[in-house]
Image 1 (tube, rainbow, N blue to C red):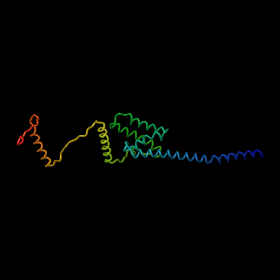
Image 2: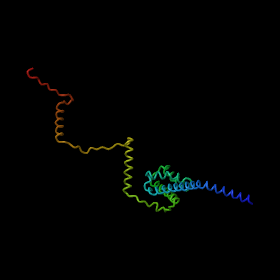
Image 3: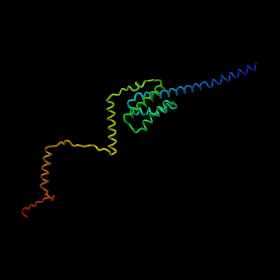
Image 4: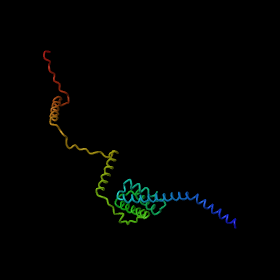
Length: 206
Protein backbone atom coordinates (compact mmCIF):
# COMPACT_ATOMS: atom_id res chain seq x y z
CA UNK A 1 0.00 0.00 0.00
CA UNK A 2 2.84 2.31 0.91
CA UNK A 3 4.62 1.44 -2.33
CA UNK A 4 1.47 2.22 -4.35
CA UNK A 5 1.07 5.56 -2.60
CA UNK A 6 4.73 6.30 -3.26
CA UNK A 7 4.32 5.45 -6.96
CA UNK A 8 1.28 7.70 -7.26
CA UNK A 9 3.17 10.47 -5.53
CA UNK A 10 6.09 10.09 -7.93
CA UNK A 11 3.73 10.14 -10.92
CA UNK A 12 2.05 13.30 -9.70
CA UNK A 13 5.44 14.93 -9.23
CA UNK A 14 6.40 14.03 -12.78
CA UNK A 15 3.13 15.43 -14.14
CA UNK A 16 3.52 18.59 -12.08
CA UNK A 17 7.10 19.06 -13.17
CA UNK A 18 6.16 18.46 -16.81
CA UNK A 19 3.35 20.99 -16.66
CA UNK A 20 5.66 23.48 -14.95
CA UNK A 21 8.23 23.10 -17.71
CA UNK A 22 5.83 23.02 -20.64
CA UNK A 23 3.49 25.71 -19.37
CA UNK A 24 5.52 28.69 -20.65
CA UNK A 25 6.27 26.91 -23.92
CA UNK A 26 2.61 26.14 -24.54
CA UNK A 27 1.67 29.69 -23.56
CA UNK A 28 4.15 31.13 -26.08
CA UNK A 29 2.90 28.80 -28.81
CA UNK A 30 -0.69 29.71 -28.04
CA UNK A 31 0.20 33.42 -28.23
CA UNK A 32 1.92 32.90 -31.59
CA UNK A 33 -1.13 31.05 -32.91
CA UNK A 34 -3.43 33.86 -31.79
CA UNK A 35 -1.19 36.50 -33.42
CA UNK A 36 -0.99 34.49 -36.65
CA UNK A 37 -4.77 34.14 -36.72
CA UNK A 38 -5.25 37.87 -36.16
CA UNK A 39 -2.76 38.79 -38.89
CA UNK A 40 -4.46 36.49 -41.37
CA UNK A 41 -7.88 37.85 -40.42
CA UNK A 42 -6.64 41.44 -40.79
CA UNK A 43 -5.09 40.74 -44.20
CA UNK A 44 -8.33 39.20 -45.42
CA UNK A 45 -10.36 42.13 -44.12
CA UNK A 46 -7.99 44.63 -45.75
CA UNK A 47 -8.40 42.85 -49.09
CA UNK A 48 -12.17 43.06 -48.80
CA UNK A 49 -12.08 46.69 -47.70
CA UNK A 50 -9.74 47.68 -50.55
CA UNK A 51 -11.83 45.91 -53.17
CA UNK A 52 -15.01 47.51 -51.85
CA UNK A 53 -13.45 50.97 -51.69
CA UNK A 54 -11.93 50.76 -55.19
CA UNK A 55 -14.65 48.81 -56.99
CA UNK A 56 -15.36 51.85 -59.17
CA UNK A 57 -11.65 52.25 -60.02
CA UNK A 58 -10.48 48.76 -60.93
CA UNK A 59 -7.35 50.03 -62.70
CA UNK A 60 -5.79 51.59 -59.60
CA UNK A 61 -2.66 50.00 -58.13
CA UNK A 62 -4.40 49.30 -54.80
CA UNK A 63 -7.23 47.43 -56.51
CA UNK A 64 -4.92 45.33 -58.68
CA UNK A 65 -2.72 44.50 -55.67
CA UNK A 66 -5.74 43.37 -53.65
CA UNK A 67 -6.97 41.17 -56.52
CA UNK A 68 -3.55 39.52 -56.78
CA UNK A 69 -3.45 38.91 -53.01
CA UNK A 70 -6.73 36.94 -52.96
CA UNK A 71 -5.29 33.50 -53.87
CA UNK A 72 -2.54 34.00 -51.27
CA UNK A 73 -4.51 35.08 -48.22
CA UNK A 74 -7.51 32.90 -49.06
CA UNK A 75 -5.46 29.85 -50.01
CA UNK A 76 -7.46 26.67 -49.53
CA UNK A 77 -10.80 28.51 -49.38
CA UNK A 78 -12.36 26.82 -52.42
CA UNK A 79 -15.44 29.04 -53.02
CA UNK A 80 -13.31 32.19 -52.99
CA UNK A 81 -10.42 30.75 -55.00
CA UNK A 82 -12.85 29.37 -57.59
CA UNK A 83 -14.56 32.77 -57.90
CA UNK A 84 -11.15 34.45 -58.21
CA UNK A 85 -10.01 32.04 -60.93
CA UNK A 86 -13.20 32.63 -62.92
CA UNK A 87 -12.75 36.39 -62.65
CA UNK A 88 -9.03 36.17 -63.49
CA UNK A 89 -9.79 34.01 -66.54
CA UNK A 90 -12.25 36.59 -67.81
CA UNK A 91 -9.79 39.46 -67.34
CA UNK A 92 -6.82 37.80 -68.99
CA UNK A 93 -8.17 35.45 -71.66
CA UNK A 94 -11.01 37.33 -73.31
CA UNK A 95 -10.14 39.44 -76.36
CA UNK A 96 -13.51 41.18 -76.52
CA UNK A 97 -13.72 44.26 -74.30
CA UNK A 98 -17.10 45.57 -75.35
CA UNK A 99 -20.21 46.27 -73.30
CA UNK A 100 -21.03 42.59 -72.77
CA UNK A 101 -17.49 41.92 -71.59
CA UNK A 102 -17.73 44.84 -69.17
CA UNK A 103 -21.03 43.65 -67.71
CA UNK A 104 -19.67 40.12 -67.34
CA UNK A 105 -16.62 41.50 -65.55
CA UNK A 106 -18.84 43.36 -63.08
CA UNK A 107 -20.93 40.23 -62.45
CA UNK A 108 -17.88 38.06 -61.80
CA UNK A 109 -16.28 40.70 -59.60
CA UNK A 110 -19.46 41.05 -57.57
CA UNK A 111 -19.55 37.28 -57.13
CA UNK A 112 -15.97 37.29 -55.84
CA UNK A 113 -16.61 40.26 -53.58
CA UNK A 114 -19.71 38.61 -52.11
CA UNK A 115 -17.76 35.42 -51.33
CA UNK A 116 -14.97 37.34 -49.61
CA UNK A 117 -17.42 39.54 -47.71
CA UNK A 118 -19.27 36.52 -46.38
CA UNK A 119 -15.99 35.00 -45.19
CA UNK A 120 -14.91 38.12 -43.29
CA UNK A 121 -18.34 38.72 -41.80
CA UNK A 122 -19.96 41.19 -44.19
CA UNK A 123 -23.01 40.10 -46.13
CA UNK A 124 -23.90 42.83 -48.60
CA UNK A 125 -26.54 42.34 -51.24
CA UNK A 126 -25.69 42.63 -54.92
CA UNK A 127 -27.60 45.91 -55.06
CA UNK A 128 -25.54 47.31 -52.18
CA UNK A 129 -22.26 46.32 -53.77
CA UNK A 130 -23.30 47.86 -57.08
CA UNK A 131 -24.27 51.13 -55.40
CA UNK A 132 -21.13 53.16 -55.99
CA UNK A 133 -20.41 56.86 -55.57
CA UNK A 134 -18.26 57.91 -58.50
CA UNK A 135 -18.31 61.63 -59.45
CA UNK A 136 -18.55 62.39 -63.14
CA UNK A 137 -15.47 64.57 -62.83
CA UNK A 138 -13.44 61.51 -61.78
CA UNK A 139 -14.60 59.66 -64.86
CA UNK A 140 -13.57 62.61 -67.04
CA UNK A 141 -10.19 62.76 -65.32
CA UNK A 142 -9.63 59.05 -65.96
CA UNK A 143 -10.59 59.46 -69.63
CA UNK A 144 -8.21 62.40 -70.02
CA UNK A 145 -5.40 60.54 -68.24
CA UNK A 146 -5.89 57.52 -70.49
CA UNK A 147 -5.94 59.72 -73.60
CA UNK A 148 -2.70 61.40 -72.50
CA UNK A 149 -1.07 58.06 -71.70
CA UNK A 150 -2.09 56.55 -75.04
CA UNK A 151 -1.08 59.65 -77.00
CA UNK A 152 2.32 59.95 -75.33
CA UNK A 153 3.03 56.25 -75.89
CA UNK A 154 2.15 56.59 -79.60
CA UNK A 155 4.28 59.73 -79.86
CA UNK A 156 7.37 58.12 -78.35
CA UNK A 157 6.93 55.03 -80.52
CA UNK A 158 6.80 57.19 -83.65
CA UNK A 159 3.22 56.20 -84.46
CA UNK A 160 1.93 59.75 -84.01
CA UNK A 161 3.18 63.22 -84.90
CA UNK A 162 2.27 66.47 -83.19
CA UNK A 163 0.06 68.66 -85.41
CA UNK A 164 1.56 72.13 -85.86
CA UNK A 165 -0.25 75.15 -87.29
CA UNK A 166 1.12 78.71 -87.43
CA UNK A 167 -1.83 81.03 -87.01
CA UNK A 168 -0.05 84.32 -86.59
CA UNK A 169 3.46 85.72 -86.38
CA UNK A 170 4.24 88.85 -84.44
CA UNK A 171 5.99 91.43 -86.65
CA UNK A 172 7.86 94.67 -86.05
CA UNK A 173 6.99 97.37 -88.69
CA UNK A 174 10.55 98.66 -88.75
CA UNK A 175 12.02 95.18 -89.18
CA UNK A 176 9.46 94.44 -91.90
CA UNK A 177 10.42 97.59 -93.81
CA UNK A 178 14.12 96.78 -93.54
CA UNK A 179 13.46 93.25 -94.82
CA UNK A 180 11.46 94.62 -97.78
CA UNK A 181 14.26 97.03 -98.70
CA UNK A 182 16.80 94.23 -98.47
CA UNK A 183 14.67 92.08 -100.78
CA UNK A 184 14.52 94.89 -103.33
CA UNK A 185 18.28 95.31 -103.28
CA UNK A 186 18.77 91.54 -103.62
CA UNK A 187 16.45 91.46 -106.63
CA UNK A 188 18.29 94.36 -108.24
CA UNK A 189 21.67 92.71 -107.68
CA UNK A 190 20.80 89.52 -109.55
CA UNK A 191 19.76 89.01 -113.14
CA UNK A 192 16.87 86.81 -114.19
CA UNK A 193 19.25 83.92 -114.89
CA UNK A 194 20.64 84.13 -111.39
CA UNK A 195 23.92 85.81 -112.30
CA UNK A 196 25.21 88.65 -110.20
CA UNK A 197 25.06 92.04 -111.87
CA UNK A 198 28.44 93.81 -111.68
CA UNK A 199 28.91 97.47 -112.45
CA UNK A 200 32.47 98.65 -113.07
CA UNK A 201 33.01 102.28 -112.14
CA UNK A 202 36.14 103.81 -113.66
CA UNK A 203 38.48 105.22 -111.10
CA UNK A 204 38.95 108.95 -111.52
CA UNK A 205 42.40 110.04 -112.55
CA UNK A 206 43.30 106.63 -113.90
